[in-house]
Image (cartoon, rainbow, N blue to C red):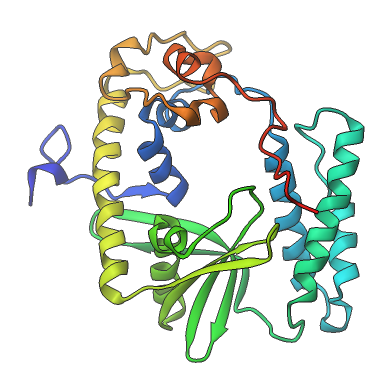
Length: 297
C-alpha cells in the first residue's frame, strides 16, 4: 500500500466520503473548504444569492413536473409549479423578485414545451453513488434519461454564461454521475448534457471508458489531498460536544498552510468572504443579485 493511502498512525486510511461539490470546493479554495466542511460551528455566511434562488426554483419546478401524471405535463403546469415554489432570497426588493419570477416562469415553460411528456426519465433528482478503493462518492442527478441501450446524465443550468461541449467534457461532477449511474443501474452511461435554460441550448459530451476513468483518478487525487488536510485538522482541533453551550473559539491561523486561500475573481461570490482578508482584497463583494442572467427575455 502506498504511503498516501496510510493515515497518521500508519493504518490504512478509511474511504474518503464525499460529493462532487466537496471535491470541487477543495479545488477552488482550501480555505473555503475548511469553513464549509470542517469548522464547527460553521462561520456565518454572507447574504443569500438571487441567482441561486432562480436556479433552485427552476430545478424544483422541473422535478415536480416529471412527477405529475403524464396528461398533466403541460408547459403551463411547469410555469404554475415555478410560481408556487418561487424562492425570494437574495433579490434587491419585492419588485425585482416579481420580475424574475415572471422571467423564470417563461424560461421554464419554454423548456417544458420542448420535452416529450411521455418520455419517462429513468430518474429525477436521483441519488447515485459509487466507490473505489480510495473514495466513496455520491451525488444527486437532475435527470437521468434512457437513450437507446444507454443512460444519459442531464444537468439543468440557469446561469448567465453560455455553455459549450468543453464544459460538459471537463465537468468532474457529470463524469462521476455517469460512472455512478452505470454501476448502480447496470447500464452503460457515457453521455453527459448541460441544458442551459436561458438560451435553450444543450452542451453535450460523449465520454469513453478511458475518459471516465481519468476523471475518477482525478477525483481520487483530489480526495487524497483533502483527506490528508482533514486528518491534520482533526488531530489538533477539538470536536464540539453536544453539551457545549458555546463551543470554544479556535484559532485557525495555524491551518492556513494546509488550507490556503486561493484569491481571485471568484472571491466576489464566496459565502465566507467576510472571514477572508485575502479574498476581500482580491475582489470586491458583489450585490446578491449581481449574477442574474441579464439576457433572459
